[in-house]
Image (cartoon, rainbow, N blue to C red; front, side):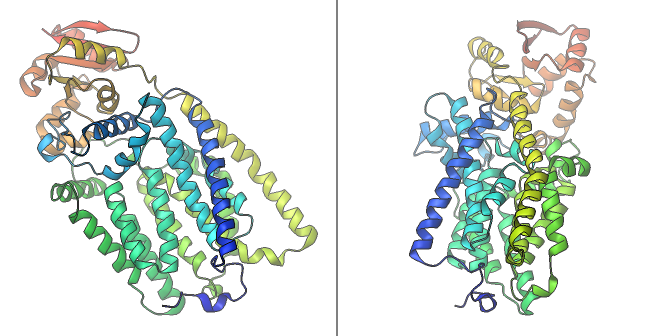
Amino acid sequence: MTEPFSAAHNGSPSLPVRSAFARSRAALECAAAFVACFGLMLWIEFAGPAIVDHDGYYHIRWSWMLRQSAPHLPRFEWLPLTILRAPDYVDHHFFFHVLLTPFTFGDLRIGAKVAAAFFAALALTALFGVLIAWRLRFRWFWLALMAVGAEQFIYRMTMTRAPSLSLALLATGSWLILRRRLWPLAFLTFVFVWTYSMFPLMVIFACAYAATVYFCEKRIDLGAVCATVTGAVAGLVINPYFPKNLALLWRHVLMVRGGASEVDPGVEWGPFDTWQSLTDDLAVCVVFFLALLAFDWRRRKADSRPLFFLLLFLLFTVFLARWSRFVEYWPPFAVLFAAFTLDPLLPRIKGRNRVAMLVLTLAVTAAPLWRNIHEGRDDVITEEDPFGLRGASAWLAQHTPAGSLVFNTAWDEFPMLFFYNQHDVYVSGLDPRYLTDAHADLGRLYEAVVKGQEKHPGAAIVSRFGAHYVVTGNSQEDFLDAARSSGEFETVYSDSNAQVLRIR
C-alpha cells in the first residue's frame, strides 16, 4: 500500500523518518523531551500540596481500590442515589485507572501529583514525536510552545485526570492516520474506549483525514474511518462493563447535547471566554495567525498535512466555543498546524533574515511563555486545601454505622470525601446530573436544599434522602443560614474548613 501524498515529497524535509540511525536519534530525542517535560511539570505540580482539581482525589483512591481488589473489579457503592449506583456502575476511565495503579503505593496525594506530571509529559512527548516523524525544523521551539504556550492547557495537564492521556492517544492516532497504519489505529481506538469517554474524537480525526484526502486528491479514502469505528465498536462490546457502558455512553451524549437535565453541570460544560483565550494563549495565537497568513491552499496536493491539522484546529475551536473542557486540545493542534505550515517556508529564509526571524520570534513569545509557567504554579498554589475535609471525614468514619448515607452539600466535594472516608456513602458526586438523571425530584430538592431555599431542610433530608448527617464546607453560607434558622440541626464536628451536622 502506497503512502498518501508521498509522491510530491521527494527530498523534502517532510519525509517520514526511515533509517535505523534516524530512528535511534528520534528515540533519544523523544527520551530527552520526556525528561524535560516531566521535570517541568513536576516543578509546576509541586508548587502546592493539593491534587489539582477535585476529581483527582476520586481517581487515585479508586485506582488504589482497583489494585487492592485485583484481579476482581471492586464494587462501587458510594453514590447509591445516582446513575452510578452499584448495580449500574461503569468505570469509563477503566484503563486510565489501571495505569494509575503504579502510583498508588505510599502517599496517594504525592502519587497522584507525580502521575499527573508523568501523563502530561507522555502527552507532550507524543506530540513531539509527530514533529520528529516528519523531521520538522525548530521542533524544540514547537514543543515549548505546546507545553507552556497556553495557561489553561498547563492547568489541565496538572490534573490527575484522563485528558492528558487522551491527548497522548490522539497524537499517536494522528501519526497512525497520516501513515495509514490501519490495524494499529483500530487497536489504539479500542484502548481509547477503555480509557476515556472522549474516544469519539479518534473517529472525528479519521473523518478529518478523509475530508483532507478528498480536498487534496478528489478521491474517497475511508480506511481510517473504518479502522476507528471498528476499534470503537470492539472496545464497547469487549468491555468488562458491557452492556451497562452503552447506557452510560448514551447518557453522556444527552449531557453533551444538554438534554439530560436542567442542572448546571459546572464550568467545564460552559463556553470558554474568547478574550481570556486570546490573552492567556497569546504566544500560541500569534504563531497560529502567522501560519494562517502563510497557509497556501494551492500547495495542498504537495503536502496535505497542514490542511489536516487546520481542520482539527477548526473542529476544536468550534467545540471550545461551546464547551471549555476541550481547552487541552486546542493549543497543541494549533501549534501542529503552524509547525507543518511554516516548516516548508523556512529554507527560503536565508542568512541574516533567519537570525532576525529567530530573535523576533523569541522576543514575542518568551515573555508569555515565562508568564504562563508562573501562572501555572500559581494555579497549583491556590488550589483548595487538600486536608480541608480530612477532619470531618474522620469524624464521620468513627461515629456513624458503616454504609451510612451522608448528605454532602457540594457535589464536587465528593471526591475528597471519598478519598478520606470510604466508610460512608454520599448523596451526590462526580457530576450533579448523575443524581438528577436517576431521580429528577431528588435532584431538584437537592438544589433547593444546598441553596438555602428549603424552609425545613432537615426534615426534607431525612424523609426524602434517608440521611441523618450532613457534611458541609464553611463556605456554604446559604445552606448554613437555612439550617440555623430551621433549628433542625446540631453541630457535632467543626473545624476551620468544614462542619458535620446531625439532624435532630
